[in-house]
Length: 283
Image (cartoon, rainbow, N blue to C red):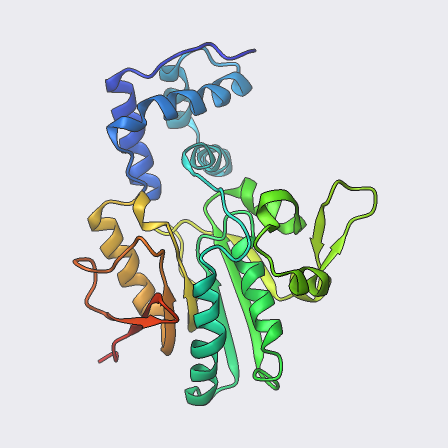
């Protein structure tokens, strides 16, 4: 079945927006009605459904694993996952030059846990892997683990292949591209992350407001994500992050984001011209 050129009514949009908010915390503004209409139509076509009402009813009737699977498709529809390696590169300069040496100096246990909390198609966690590999001498004797999570199954599938090209790799320094990637033969400029870095990263599916968080996190990246949530959900999310970050930890958010009026649990720092937060002492 092809696309039907349907458009959500205001009432239908509000029903889907409320459902998406309750299941994933994602807040959809009214101006997103056309975007949601266009993206949901592809789902309708795949399921051979002829109206948004039919799709909503379909979602409501599902149970168990089938319900979880279809809601993952719905979250794919509303998520934007465009990213690239070394996005906001000053964050990674701060990480390598200041944050990692500080953690190594202060943390008594030689175990580093890094969490890319909304990893999308994998560019961020693999950039983190490159940074840690470049600091191998500093981290000698340390156990290093990078956790990469996302609500979207499709982007995790893409990330697990670790193959990138074009705009996604444009900002990778040439020496890193040669050192940490293999150019795939007979490909049009497609590079694969080398096995040693791939083994550092563990991908898994996670819904911020449904699933338990990993614990004992030293480096937490959650950039350009809070814009999807309303203030109450932002406060809840940052509060949950505070619970799992170590006393030695660093929390990276997007350059256009802030914790002002959201959380008093973190201290703002400007490191290498980047906004970086550290947790206040836990009582």
